Amino acid sequence: MKTRLQKVIADAGLASRREAERWIAEGRVKVNGNVVTKMGTTVDPFLDEIRARGKLIPRPQGRVFILLNKPANFLTTMGEDERGRKTVMDLIKNIPARVFPVGRLDYNTQGALLLSSDGSISKKLLDPKYQVPRTYLVKVRGVPDEKTLRRLRRGVGLDNQSTMPLEAEVDRVSGKNSFVKIKMFEGKNRHVKRICEVIRHPVIRLKRTHFGSLSLVGLPLGAYRFLSPREIKSLELLVAKKPEEGKRTLRRPMARSKRLQAKP
Image (cartoon, rainbow, N blue to C red; front, side):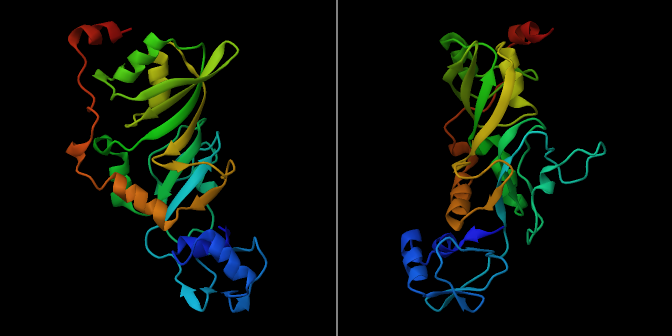
């Protein structure tokens, strides 16, 4: 994927983005042997030879991390869908490594989806013991009151267990419905939709806005970008601590009375 030249230089740790822009303007940057002075020039850091002040910027090697702004109506899967539906891999082109989704987003859910070639860190990012936050903006029917939000924050019953505590607040009201911001630290199948059903505010539309500290700012729907070394380091730090050092309590079995109440 093409990236602005000054960003490639900055991500390589050679200069700030503003300083990189000055180098370009001064004719001190070459791409494939040609001096580049036009601001806004885009390059492919995996394919192009880039030199800044005579220093060769190494091409990315080894691990690859990609942030995709997934549109609705795309499956999060590596293989082809037997029903012919499009998958997120249809959106990822010319990647110099085999990447796979870190977790999944439902077919009709949009937003931040991380893909990586590093299976080890991907597994840890999904492990609830490391409590990596995922933030969602959820349009629900009705407007949850504070009592309902407190119940959601404490954890509700799913699969005969109480979910982990989470953060939840009403972001804004839209007519008879509302947008609720939810930050959670675990992920089960259709997790957000199911907990909203439990509190009787079913989901109308769902978007994941953040994965850890990664956000969708500046990333159009359906587009993707490579993570910078700094962003990759931030992911590594999230799972560098020992699992038992986490501050939040893991989900606990539901009390017998609650299990009975949860049955239809």
